[in-house]
Amino acid sequence: MGKWLDRLHSEISETPYEGSSESAKRGDSILSTPTHEGGYENSRGAVEALPAAPTKRGPTARIYRLIRAQGDEAHADAWSADTIGAFIVRRDAFLRRGYGTDDADDLAERLTLRDREQDGRRMCVECSHLGERGRCLAAAGGQLPDADRRLEPVPTILQRCEAFGLRKGMT
Image (cartoon, rainbow, N blue to C red):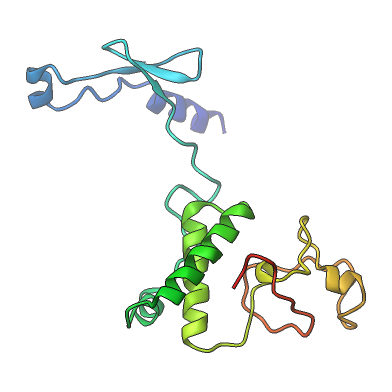
């Protein structure tokens, strides 16, 4: 493990990129150094904010994104004003629930595809019985007799549920 850390340290401590030879000729080369305030100070004295920290999945992972065929089907016809309105309401609801912008867009688009396919399944995140801490309140109240009363469902999987109740603010 020590060799790996030594290698990592040597790669990190290398000289930062100074720009291309063309940018150096023009004087556009900017070197950035960390500041104690949590930003970067470039060679011209301007302080820049730190770049956004990547998530555990990485900055480009979009786990809710439709695959190409699904995307083609979801956008095969022009969206009506009602479809666009439902998309916006759903996206905003996902944002309020704490999902990131890309995830909220992808989930709302997934629900639009579900509507176009006339699929009767729902996501728990759409349900009024999903508690703030992720527990199913219908299961806790005994409305789902075969379910554990401590059920914490995966909120973004499409499924059928006899206790489903549409959450206020969803369509």
